[in-house]
Length: 432
Image 1 (cartoon, rainbow, N blue to C red):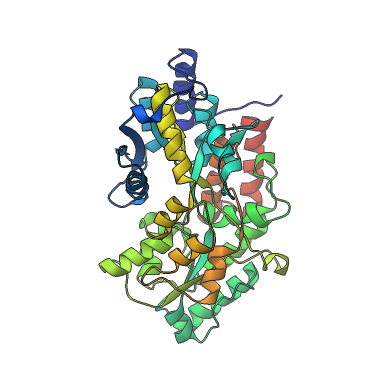
Image 2: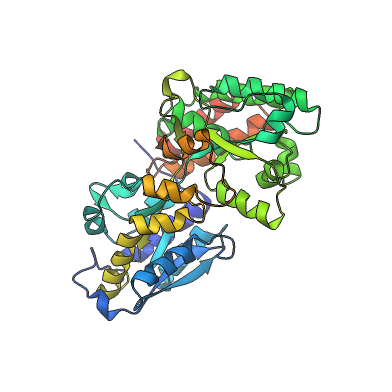
């Protein structure tokens, strides 16, 4: 018999949302027949507003087209976002709309009845909108994506030139990546390492789960991860990659490693384009020539359309809002799925959920952004798979995998032993 267990914040979230759903509240179903013209302001949750400008960009762009409606932002703590949002929803003080910051927690909100049905908005969208399937359950859609990140391979052209190593061109496998990382480290003679893979489980498991044909996070069968860990451990042992212990003990940030030229390569999400541009302008990152290439692949069969991963980021509507506010919120969601919104996001280096020729042109018109052929191919051509498939089991299984990740890279257990233990836990705590 399948058994679902949530831990930590997820358990708190499920409890709070269930209680709210059972209390009845003001659930307005699909929003009724409200009149958006009766509303002059709607509220939207965001986090770290000073360093995460996308929320204000969307609010301003919408207001430019709808001068009678103001989108008011409510700031939350980035690290406690879901916990605080759950508390506000339970207390009836949540904003009219909120961002689904972590896809693995989407099912908690959806199952708790804390998202309005926005299928009618999606049905009117023209063109492709990446990530919409992640927010659709049994034919009903509960959020509209505004951004769809993807993981790339960033590289420092100056350090590659110094080492005499050819740039990644989109044809690399992970074995090519490891070989070049070691060659770079040797050639740079201690001035910089060949690569930097941050301590997150995403930097290894995200790629494995997207690219490995045997991968299925929800199955609890994770033997396929063993060779992926063996490759990274070898990079650490050969001084081509900083050790996991050094990263965690010293609280090393990935921005400091690539931005100050401590590493010649770095797998990271597309959001880092905007961050690096901003940090080079502010002086927080050094000035150097850089680019981004497709993530290395399992083998050459996927290099024409590289497979990578990332979760979409969507916006949902608080079901406690009245019918008029629901209508206004849906109008805003329709806007965030538009080319106009996508263009506004692309202007600040955000990868929007809508990508077409005009959006791509806008993205690569940003001052300082790499405009080489490989970078443009990387942005426009890939298959992005979600890191967190939507399931009530996802959060707990990912927590188990994260424990295994730390255990392996810290040297506590071999990949075989740690993965076997994780599989046993998955069966006993979740799937058994």
